[in-house]
Image 1 (cartoon, rainbow, N blue to C red):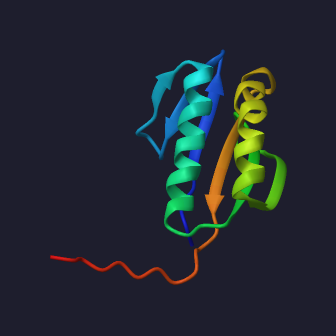
Image 2: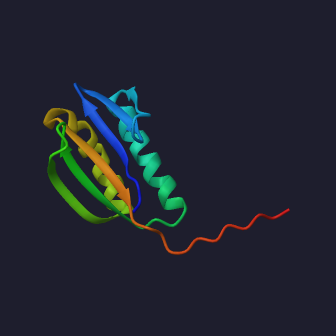
Length: 106
């Protein structure tokens, strides 16, 4: 199973990271970080993402399955800032990309 990166906002502050390695950032920076993360996944062939919304108590509040990269990027400017108002976490899980082969050229 793949691990998701989490964009969580509390009291108007964004945290982007994985697990306990979160750092506090402004909401605008949180959106930019989330989009950069999506683009990094896209650069290695990830085409779809599941987006889950959970409460601060980790209760599931919403689920958007199989979002395209474009759909996920378009959603971030709305999902990340609104998560602080709703006290939600936004969890982005990439689907496995097609086989990727990396070759080192010397």
